[in-house]
Every structure is written in structure tokens, then in C-alpha cells.
Amino acid sequence: MPFDEEDLPRLSILYGSQTGNAEDVAVWIWRQAVLRSDVSLHLGTMDDYDLFVSAKVKQTVLFVCSTTGQGDPPDNMKKFWRSLLNRHLSADFLNSWTVAVLGLGDSKYSNFNYAARKLHARLIQLGAKGLLDVGLADDQHPLGYESVVSVWKKNFWTEFHQLYPNVRQPTEAETSLQNRFNIIWQDQCRCVGEMCEKSQRDEQSQPVEAEVVENRRITAEDHFQDVRLISFELKPPVAYLPGDVVWIRPANLDESVQLFHDTVQMEHLDRPFYLQPAFPGTPISETLQRIPPVLTFRHLISNVFDLQAVPGCNFFKLFSLFAATELHREKLQSFASPDGIDDLYNYCNRPRRTVVEVLSEFPETARNVPLEYWFDLLGEIKPRPFSICSSAQLDRQVEIVVAVVRYRTRISSDRLGLCSNWLKRLHAGHRLSVTIKHGSLVFPAADRPTILIGPGTGVAALRSFLRYRLARKIDTTNVLFFGCRHRLKDYLFEKEFETMAKSGHIRLYTAFSRDQREKIYVQHLLRQQAPTIYKLLTEKDAIVYICGNANSMPTQVIETLKQILVEEGSMSEEKADAYLKKMVTSKQLQQEVWS
Image 1 (spheres, rainbow, N blue to C red):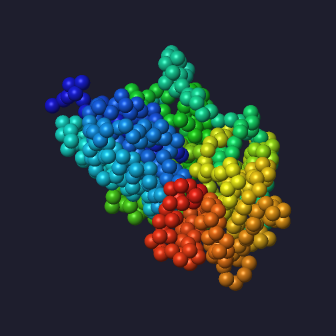
Image 2: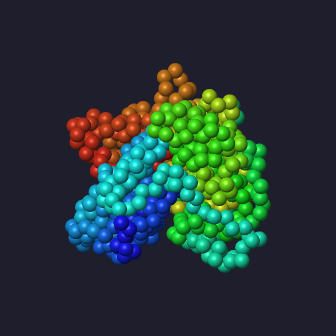
Image 3: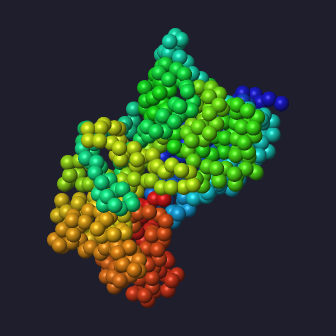
């Protein structure tokens, strides 16, 4: 029995997304929801949602959020989160809501999915009813987030339809085949104003223009890792502080673009068009909002669609609908099925096969894809953050350190990290758009002592801070632990740090792991300086910063700090754990790590 319009079940899908992954998942759930025509539907960021107006509206609210920094919520969730933390809210404030929370995280980080877990707990605390357990997707899973997300989505819809048994359930084929946009060719369009209005750009948080001043390698030519120091001149100049980051959205690499063109042989590459939402309320991504409303596929293929992404189940589910042969259809559908998870892992995830390489292996099917479905089939290039390593007080340009990602799998051609290789190829004079944002690290403005642990490119933000203190002539204790493989090959900023050490600005301890028979890492140096570290922590209230790769270094450094507290302070392990936890809560211990 259909619902009266006023009595339609309400479903709000809200997301908090820093790099776009949570937004992508929210949009896919919206795609599944929009065909349930007897549901009143809303999709948007948490910060754009009016909590106090909607609190007493009976509805189901689905949240998708990532975790950033020190277990913090994403930027477009922070205002909503602060509203939820209002101490004056009653225990029944959200008793009209039924909620479901899906978190996207990385288990290499100590605060794995912390924002999602905190959000779920606070919603329940305010009287909301939980529809199902909080989903904790892990990017470290061999299949990435999709391993949890696909199961969680299925369970959500099962519970939702038990809550609203009269809501129509679309078939799997209907959900997969529904496109988000229609294409309106400019030369056939008489309603330019309407099309442009639907693609208006958000004028807030606009990027600034940056011009490359210098792009040079700072590791030895015979070292396996190419690390670049890239300097930009911002136009106009933008003020920044230590710990701030530059967000850069790359374009596709030329070879990937050429492979796409050779495979798909798309017509109308340069014919201008507008996007028309297929449904009212169809979400238009921030990327599409920031580019001119008149589009061409040549521009999208070069600059917007992510051709180097590793495709997941949703890609194969949709791609299979355009299969050129029955054999191809069966193969593609098997990758999208629960029984084909191992095959999908071995075909895509393990060798890091890219979406454009998959298209090239099924060229006839790729040529069958209708133009409007490329917006559903391909994801968008996400911006990448890089810690600023310069100081606004000392340097005219903004500088970043980039480790160029290049590695081998069983696929014959090297795997290339998109952003790092795109940046490597930029020459002086190249102009691009960047955005300066606050990072996760909070550095002290006063003369508080610091213990800085930054092996490899992890030293970038720490260099910015040290140069800031040097410019401000802040006289205090700065202890820097730097590590790399070889003193003569990848000792980043060697002359600068050695000069700082000689002048007394820093105490410098270096670990060159491959320059002797037994490997030495930064945690070993910490252990050697145990009495000094203990005194700095317990008597001088020094702040500890750990920056670098999230593989094992952060965990081992924290374990070393714990052992220093146990041995130098005669603490029990339980008391040392509590001490470190208090340090994290008070931001006396901060991490900026990545995988």
C-alpha cells in the first residue's frame, strides 16, 4: 500500500568526508535509495544539515564518516559534531531518530574509526535508536573499504525494510543501471540558464594559484627512492603556520589518458555539454562544482575521472551490464559477486591493476558504455595533502617534500602513484591550483620543549616548525630524531639540520638503518637517550611529535616511550599506558602518519 506524501518514510544520508571517500560511499547508498520512490530522501554533508530543526522529525538517518588527524572528524562534519556535544541537549533530544553509522578508517592508525565510533555513541546517548551495529570499514583489508561496506549496506537495507515493510524494494539490476546524470549537448540546449544553475560552483574555500619555482631531486641518483623538494609561489600569498598542509589535485598521467582514448575510441570528445540530474536532488560533487558548467569529455578524461584507481565490486557490477559478449558478462559479474572476492583480489587488488587497464582488457565492452554512465563508472581524482616543510617567516615560497611512488607487481609495467608522479613531471613555471588547510598537528607558539621524531619524509612538518622557531628566535629545547637508510643517499636536509645542531637550535640524533650490519632505527636512538627523554616528558612537559609512515614506526616509537616511563620512572605498565593516554588526550603526544 503506497504512502501518503506527508507520511512518506524519511531517510537522510549525511556524510563527513575529508578526501572524498566517505562522500563516494554516501552517493552509492543514495543511488540505491533514490529508486525507492516512496521514501522522502535527503543527501548532504553533516555540516549543511540543521540539527536543531530536524531533531524532532521522525526519520532514519544514515551517517558515513571518515577519521582524520588525531582521531578528529572531517572538516565538513566539525560544526555538526560541535552541535551534538552541546551540554544542554537532553537525553531524549534525538528520540525521533533511528540511526546507522558507517565509518571509513585505516587500522594502521591508533585511532581507527574513532570519529565514527564517537558519533554513534553520542547519537545513542541523545536518545536515538540504533538500526544496526556501527560499520568499521578498514582500508588495510586486501579489498579495501568495500569488504565491509558492501555487507553493511546490504544489512542496512534489510533492517530498513523491516522498519518500513511497505517501501518498494528495487531489483539489483535496477539499482545498478540507474545513471545519476543525463547529458545535454550545448548545441541542442535551449535552457542554458537552467543547466548552469544546476552546476553552480561553491565559491567558498576556493583554491589559490600556485606557480612551480623549483622541482628537484634531493636523494642520490643511485638511491631507489626519488624524493623531490618542490617550491611554489602562491598568487596571492597565503599565510600559513607549521603543521599546515597543501592539498593538490593532480591530473591523469599522459600514458593513462592515451590508453583510455586508444581503448574506448570515444566520439564527441570536444563537443560541449551540460549535466542534467536524472533525479531531483542528485548530488553534484565538489570537483564538478569547481569546474566550468560547460564540460567536454576530453577535459574530464584528462583532469577529472580517476583512471588509476583500482576498481572494486561496484565498478564490475555496472560494467558487466554493457558486456559485449556473454563470456565477458559472466567474467565481470563474477568479480562483483560474493563468491568472486578472491578472484577480484587476485585480478585487481593484489597486482594493483588500474581501471584504465581493466577497460583495455575488455575494449569492446568499454566501447558499449553510454556516455552518461562514465560518471557512474569512474570515480573522480581526489586531492592529496602534503605537509608544508617551509616557514612563512623565513621562506618566500611554499615548499613540500614528495616521495615518488613507483613499485613492481606481477604486472609487467611499473605501478605509479598518480599524484607523486604527476608532481615529479612539473617544470618551473607550471601553474596549478592548491588549497592551504590546517593539518592535524598543533605546534606550541611559546617556548615549550619538543621531541620531534620524523624519519624520511615525515620530517617535513617538523622542519617547518624548526624554521618557524628559528625565525622567531625561540630559545628552548628541540630534540630531533631523524632516520633514513643511508647518510650519503637519503639524509634529507642534512646541511640544514647539522647547522641547526651546531648552533644549538636543536639536539640532533640520526639513524642510518643500512649503513652498518645491524639496522638502527629512531626508536633505538630514543632508547639510548632514555634519561633525557624521561626528564623532558615528566619535568619539562615536552610535546612529542611522531611523523612518518604508519607501517610499524609509530607503534614501535610509542612502545619505546612506554618502556622509558617504566624503566626510568619505575612505573607499572598499566600506569605507563595511562600516562601515554593522558598525553594523547592533552595533545602532549601527537601523530601525523600515513600508509
